[in-house]
Length: 373
Image (tube, rainbow, N blue to C red):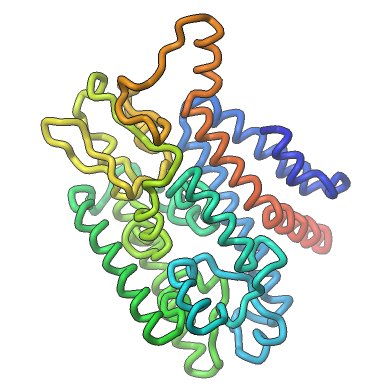
């Protein structure tokens, strides 16, 4: 992992203080993650930090390119804008019917081009599934933070997990149909709560004011208030179209989370702890983990019986797990344990996706501090 971190961050940036600082931060996070204790806690430290640094980098570049957060048509046609991940669910309609992508976006030439981001997303989906939402998404850190400010939920919605997941899929269907009919990215234009970060496509004037107020209202409601009240990542669980698509594709993930029925004491703490409303009360049986699981590790951290863990996706039952019969076999099984391999895989995507934005944001902050001092 150290090689991966230094490869993506330090090569070409050996003289950058920001690159060294961010590399040290990632090494600290990975060392603690690989221990297998407090997985979600250290994941959250990384996740929140990355979301903040990503936002700084993204906003600074928008301000430099457009002199503001309003993406008017003339400026967009001149500069283009980075591809938005929330377009992935409706991307086929734009490529087939409209033969263009958002406003337009560059097809190739960087991680935030259409080709670059879709390729990374497909690879992540095949390896860590909806772990994209739990570990990689640059916007998830905000909800992750606010959902853990309070120790107990003011509004408990865990018992409505199945209905929330059904609504999420229905909302995805509505967004896809409307976008296909109108040949317009409806979610990105009107419904995205993160346009206060990614910029708003507007002609200005009253339209621009309405768009800003709408995005601000959505952000405050879905990303701040509801996560605070419910201790859930509500926007991710019930609203984000990409998150709903990840639920549908989670079956192809190389990993899953399992509950050992022999170790589970049916306390159902994992049901309340799950940020994605992905675990249902199993009654007399063990809790049921749905395909909405984002592998965040919150249930693993909360389980005092150590009954919950990462497992390979191909394992059909716990009895199929091989047992090491020799010292070497036991060592190899420990090294290649799914808990280790998932963290390695997920964090590799984290390093790859975050390094440019994080170092860029840190450079900006350091230069700003120097200019002030």
